[in-house]
Length: 383
Image (cartoon, rainbow, N blue to C red; front, side, top):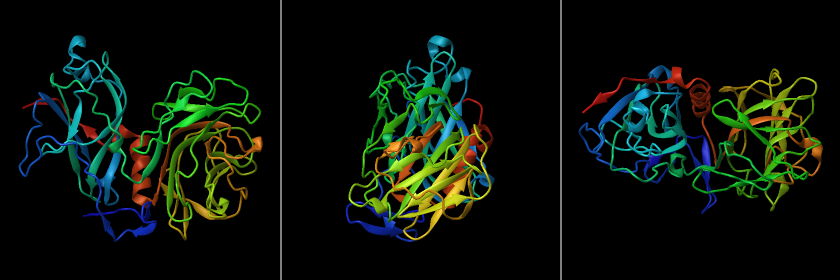
């Protein structure tokens, strides 16, 4: 039995609340490989590097936390054909494991054989507040020929993880959900243009949504969260533009009862701020946001209280702001009225059927905002 680290959650089978002190069974977080009681080298691999997260950067007890590992280039991680030590041309023999040889799930975003570039999210089973954590990046295994990248890098509470890195080539192009539930989106542009535009983002690539007149948006399935009035968390990177009010970055429609819809807004009119509406009430952030600047926005609801975080800090000011419920589920929109369409950029949009804890949001921001200072990658060693 594993303790859930979040404020709360909802079991979609029994539709019963799960609170922070309750316990439930979770799927395995290790994909296997050599685990045991004694420290051991991951079998079949020639090289490894230690990845160490300082205890000062771990501000809460969390489980199955997706750590962004972002390596711009590394000569050792080039393929052997490019004078490196990775055997597989697609980087499939790159693995992550603890000191005991238990492998970790990961979701790879990119690997470049010629430079050793590697971006991805590694699911670390346990992080304890104030305690330094070390795991290992392994490579150099000629016996690996299948892709180990897995949707299980995202815990069972993530109902959707849209990186928004896909290449958009035509209208109605599929937008991949990396969670295990595969709530893929579809480009929806009523002018049949190839938009939104894929461009350089905060972490990797992002989507640039243009003004309401062109109505760039992505359709996503309804009922991703069966009841948004129970527990929900939303995470995203956003850079809003323009001067429009109540621009929907994400809208989640429940076709059973519109009062349990959820939406995150960017309001760039007057004093620009972010807003979160769920279960018929809207909250907004204190202070203002700056146009064309990246912000990490997290919104959560535990069935009673609403929270809104900007760059890892709780900035909930009070109620007010947007009043319209979502009548479409979408990224960059969520209402028949084009005045609610987003003008700005989005990346890493995620939805969870639980209320994530404050430490989760704080560490997510710090890790994604500056990966190289959130952990340290050591030198190459051999067994």
